[in-house]
Length: 359
Image 1 (spheres, rainbow, N blue to C red):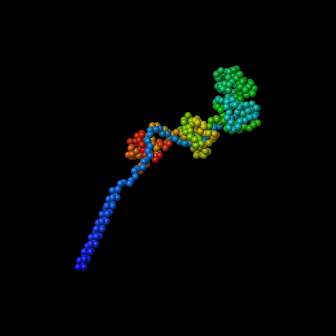
Image 2: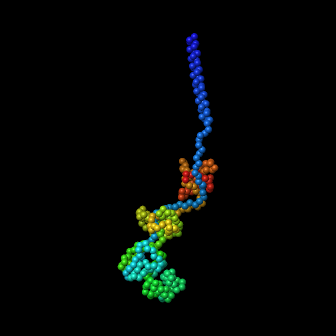
């Protein structure tokens, strides 16, 4: 009897345990199914920046350090005998007809021209281009009467010379001496004064330059192809950006010192650039500057921001095209890099397409 009860109790416990296992298993399955059947919580992809593939011109540029100043300084040697009695100050600007210095209390004024006066001129001298240069200056100063300037020194020319001499307080001889004036291509700025008051007039007097500020760079001879007279360049002066024109390209190589006086051992030529907007230099007489030369130009090419390039593991580059939210990679070949853009070409790439970019 007791044995029978024991067997029944044992069977009941086994059955209960089995039921618990089955119930537990069932509950796990149900929970798993509920979890797997819940709505997706994955956030939508974030929007990305895109840029348009454009057809444009790109130029390769090279920056060269330079110095703002007044350009080449020219020495002035006096040709008159006597004693220097007045001198200009450094920084003075002098125009046509104005005295540059004085000898024996008489002014030596400035005339404009490029042909040095190589002889004294008076009525009866042989014709020559120096006569025309004299008449052009006399006429510009209001002392005409000889008609259109030409190469003939006539009595009318002599009369004009006398009137000019009288205006300066000089002896009215009608004869023009080759040392009576200082000759320069235009208005001058006194760069430095070497003569002394009371010293001899026949000798070094001063150095002068033009009055327009220019940027001077010392360009490696190997890169002289960058500079062409009359070419437009970019100019940065005192943090302000503008444009300039190449006015002069040196033809003589100098030692290897750059604009900062550092010697890299490479021979250089001097290139002078005039400022298209003189106001960019403000009131500065001198300052560090940068000239941006155009090295190469590629016209009518496709370009994208540099940030659109993707480096491929197998080498080369691709861009990721975005077409109405659908994206695909397009392999590209790169060309010229300039101003944050890069020249690209590849099958399937076209103007107006949008590509993913980081910039």
